[in-house]
Structure formats: C-alpha cells, structure tokens
Amino acid sequence: MAAEKLVVDASVLVKWVVQEEYSEDARRLRDDFLEGRVSIHVPCTAILEASSALRKYVLRGLADDSTAAEALRLLVDSGLRIEPLGDEDPLSTLSLSLDAGITVYDAYYVSLAQRLDAPLITADEKLLRNKRVGELVRLLHVTEYRLPV
Image 1 (spheres, rainbow, N blue to C red):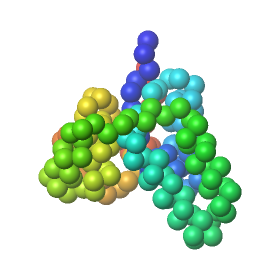
Image 2: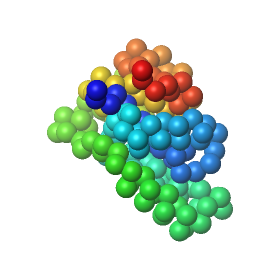
Image 3: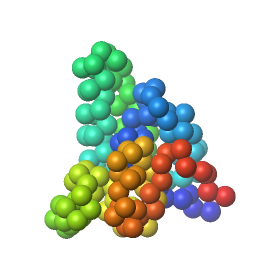
C-alpha cells in the first residue's frame, strides 16, 4: 500500500527540530514520515521559510548559529519531497492568495495540497481559521494528524 500523501507547512517542519508548542505532535508526524508510513510534500519555498524561522530563534538568543544550521541540515536531509514551482504557479498562487486573503507563501501550500489532493497540515492558527482555505483543501491542525489506517 502506498503511503498517504500529506502537505506540511513550515510551522510544522520547524517543530520537528525546535521545541515549542505542538512539537510532540509534529514529531509523531515526522516519525511516521521517516518510517515510510506517510509521504510529505512541500513547495520549494518551505525550506526558505524554515530557514527564516530558525534565523529568528538565533536572533532571539534561543539557539546558536551551529544549532540552527544543524536543525536546517536535518530538515534538508530528511527526504521531504520538495516540489518545484511550475510555470503557472506564481500567477495562480498570487490569485489564490488575493482570493483567500492569505500570504503567497501559504497559498503555495494550499495550491500544492489541491494539486496532490492531499490534506494540508499546519500549526498556523490564522490559516486554520480561514474559511476560504477550508473550502479549498482539507486543512488539519498538527494535533489532528492521525496515521492512516
């Protein structure tokens, strides 16, 4: 049986390597991914977003440079299916962003989830409250993730 496809945003990826609220839930998802029970897909922008979040941890004194670099290395080497941007993606994503009232970055995740017909897993409360996004994709808080049976 093929592993279920999931789209996971940077708010969850960062919790794989940094201890914060919902990290335990995110790591349960990570473990299922690393053991091949689910397939995680992310847009190519996800690694940049995770890098930016790790940078903020360093600037706030919550991590040092080498810890942030190692955390990023773990994410990059994890085997995530990093999806490239297609020729149509920038324009359609901008349109989706404007229509749904979300950031362009979030719109890339939504667009990818639509294209793969996969749930989008996030810890972003604002995105979860967006009714338009909920109409477009199956949106799950990381705490709602359950291994498919």
